Amino acid sequence: MLGSGGREHALAWKLAQSPRCTKLFAAPGNPGISECAETITLDAGDHAAVTRFCDENAVGLVVIGPEAPLVDGLADSLRAADIPVFGPSKAAAQLEGSKGFTKDLCARANIPTGGYVRTANLADAKAALADFSAPYVLKADGLAAGKGVVIAETLAAAEEALAEMFGGQFGEAGAEVVIEEFLEGEEASFFAITDGETILPFGTAQDHKRVGEGDTGPNTGGMGAYSPAPVLTPELQQRALDEILRPTVDTMRAEGMPYSGVLYLGLMLTADGPKLIEYNCRFGDPECQVLMMRLKSDLVQIMLACAKGELGGVAGEFADETALTVVMAAEGYPGTPAKGGAIDLGAPEAGGAKVFHAGTAVKDRQLVANGGRVLNVTAMGANVTEAQKAAYASVDAVSFESGFCRRDIGWREVERERG
Ligand code: AMP
Ligand code: GLY
Image (cartoon, rainbow, N blue to C red; front, side, top):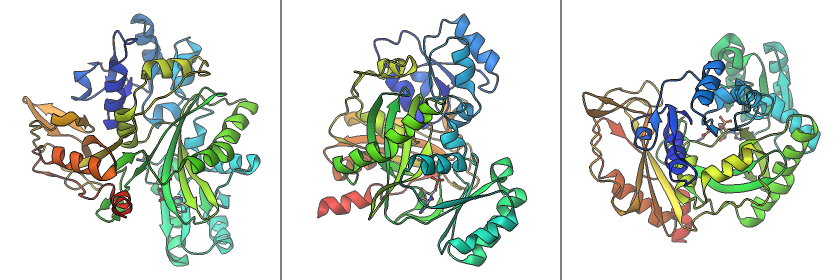
């Protein structure tokens, strides 16, 4: 397994539970992952080195956690060497790697999403703003570590943001910019595993992207999440499957870029039904943590079947309960996080909770913060209210003086459950 965050700790934790898993390596892993895998040093950018390691160690399945190695084509290199891999090819990973690619695909396959224009220079982009109204949604085309989206409230702010994007704010990722219709509604995430043909729906979740309580302040990678997301009713899931997912998978296959791996649909639940905001070619972080907490099926079996194009007949079974995760972050996040803050885990896993490590290190035998998002404290409950209570009870059992967390993860559902 490749990766080092909370998502990868959750994946490693679940993979290691499989009777099919005799040995698990994680590169580079983290202190949490080292409890369920042997952590190794391997540069995911060096495809020959990864392939050689897999050959020498008879690795039967490679799971790629983050998007960057996928967009970089690592899965292609492994497949070329006949090593089973869970994750899409470079061509298929364009669904996350290029916003313009995805918008054009939606247009070709008649998939519901916001109207858009692709622009390659500042003058065209400024001119295109005339076709939209405030708030303006501006997106750097390429991967920008989750920071490439600007929502500008005024025309002047939009023009300024475009100047920064084309001025190199996001490097190569901003060489092209997509301007998009603003969609109104509630956001929710839908996951599916596909081998390019068969689609296995793989759960729903909602996350909290803003750093502050009440969903205020700067955007982050996600401060907490829960699964399932009751707003994504079975009817809406069926629509997302029929109107968005199925046409995407079929079109990708028909055009010679079959998608194999997990597809993460960022949806806006609008008055006209679910519309696609974006695709990701990997699990969400921290959405993966709550999905893995609920997953009852053998993850190795599912991922191996996906890798081999044999997903037909495979089921994914999830607990009915809700899982909720709270991100404990280092002071300063999402700006420059303070490194080295001491963490004492105590006994937060009493009662079945699980603490996934997202950004930790061990220094002089002391667990310390080593990243923006540091821990994902995850618990289960009969509903969001109960899961939230259990998660915060575990948060309170963790001693992390220089850290902080939101105290309101799940608030929308908690309010709805209160009725
Ligand atoms: P992303 O980095 O692509 O996940 O986008 C960041 C956030 O911007 C999303 O989670 C949405 O909240 C918001 N967003 C992106 N596109 C749109 C849109 N077309 N309309 C409204 N909000 C959007
Ligand atoms: N939590 C949002 C993401 O993984 O992109």
